[in-house]
Amino acid sequence: MKYQVIVVGGGHAGCEASLASARMGQHTLLITGNIKNIADMPCNPSIGGSAKGIVVREIDALGGEMGVNADKSLLQIKMLNNKKGPAVQALRAQGDKVIYPQNMWKTISTTANLEVKQSIVEDLIVENCKIMGIILENGEKIYAESVILTTGTYMKADILVGDTRRREGPHGEKPCNYLSDNLAKLGFKIIRLKTGTPQRIDKNTIDYEKTKIEEGDKEYHTFSFDIPPQYNIDEQIPCHLVYTNEETHKIIRENLNKASMYGGLDDITGIGPRYCPSIEDKIVRFADKERHQLFLEPESAVESDEKYGNTIYLQGFSTSMPHDIQEKMVHSLAGLEHAKILKYAYAIEYDAIYPTQLKRTLETKLIENLYTAGQINGTSGYEEAACQGLIAGINASLKLQGKEPLILKRNEAYIGVLIDDLVTKGVRDPYRLLTSRAEYRLLLRHDNADLRLREYGHIVGLIDEKRYNKFLRKKKQIVELTNDLKNQKITPTKKTIDILSKIDTPLIKDGITLYDLLKRPEITINILKQYNLYNCNYNQEIINQVEINIKYDGYIKKAIKEAEKMLKLEDKKIPDDIDYSKIKNIASEAKQKLQEVRPTSIGQALRISGVNPADISILSVYLKKEYYNESK
Image (cartoon, rainbow, N blue to C red; front, side, top):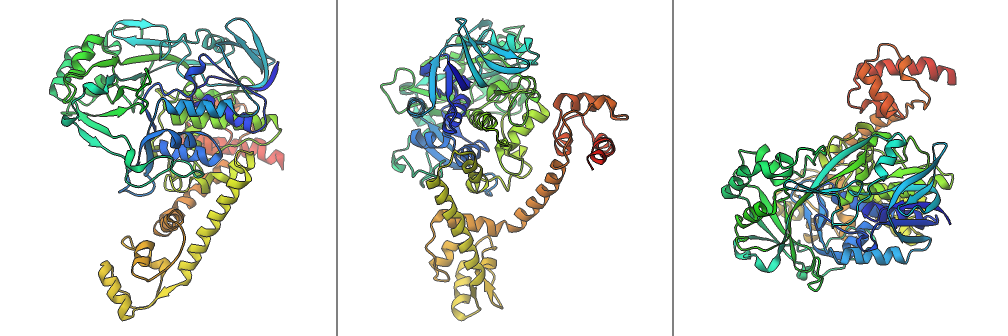
């Protein structure tokens, strides 16, 4: 049988890719090594976080599944940085490792146009640099018009503990042993990366009196724009906070040579994540710190589940130390002196492709209609994987439909920032999305993800009319409330002066619109309503959106202006057939990088490491002379 799209891998990227493809009308096959591991959370039990929580909102705005599934499966949720500005606020939820994959499986197994098969893919069928299908480990060939690879950490996966190396996946499964070699034969540059995970502790062996409780927020939140909260705010399961101490650090320092990365193994080539280091990395790199915080995170509320029902995830304690040293390390922590380790920490080394070999659609440059998404592209994190899977699924479908691809710009979405960073700059270590990576982060907020991206979701066919009409009503109400505030004034009467004095805000001498009054940080619409200076019936979501737009108006306009400058450079296209070797006076390194990345615009070329402004000036003159004049 021939499919329109085959998705290889059932992790977070594979789930989003296959659902997007099937929902857009493509006959889709999802192939995974173990159906029981579909949408598994092999590392931390959380969805969201700084920047990542905004990505989940973006996935939902486009019509993806992660936000809805997270809302249906959470143990606890909170808004991070809620005392800071809206540009850095983001949701983080503790996900239930039993319920989350169960809910995702229900969705996948009932989605039209989507079939699931359990097997391991070992090779690709390629003819004339175009994908034709895949070859399974038993030699079976399955044909397709497009293939999306979302192999996660399974390509040549090695589990590393102390001086031992085992060729297996995160749960001891058989890895994909030959696919990366066959990709290399096709011309792909393969890199070796590493990540890790901490211990799982028996929750009944922890003395919680010695820890600090970390509860969920006392107001409701959702990742999804389309469903109400699915949890009881008073039944959220708490996390707990503990710290390393001098004894912990002493144990680690004295046994550093036993860790896989510090002498336990001498054949490790994979590079670990810079922003999520092992505990031994933290002790070495931050030797001046007296302690490091760790979180005790429950993995499931389903106590009857043998795998996760009784486990606590020791967030921040990732290590590749031998088991006996791990015992000493864990028992040195306050509250964990008698803790029972149910699953030991380990590092995992795996193959990935160097992502500059991708177009911004996530289609590979070498093989037409072959897409890659997730950790195979050098990223880390469930959210980074899911958003890539969604974009790959959308673009594979759009191409089969003969339509223009969806390419999100850096000023439109964190997803656009992530993909542009990957394909333009490449990676040295597993890429993690951070707010600091987004130069227009004030535009890319948690609250406005739907306003930025829902239109795209509707255009590609993932947002139905009901959800789209709800979105249009929201936009209309935002405009209505904004205009109403601009049209209503207050004057310096005795009543208003008394009220402003109570609010502790500067008094007014002349009339002022409520819109301008709201620019003051201490004034909110709810305060105006409280003192009967204004009355409206809009819900809190609309009120919050309008307030942010008003209070940050000047900063937002400045960011938009800066983004418009960038977009002008994005409009200066670079032809596909350009031969950089013919351009005189460009530095050798710049030529090499330009040839490798093959940017599609001057804007993208500017973001390539090793390409300087002087090189861009020479390139611009060359294009104007050799291409732009000819096109006239």
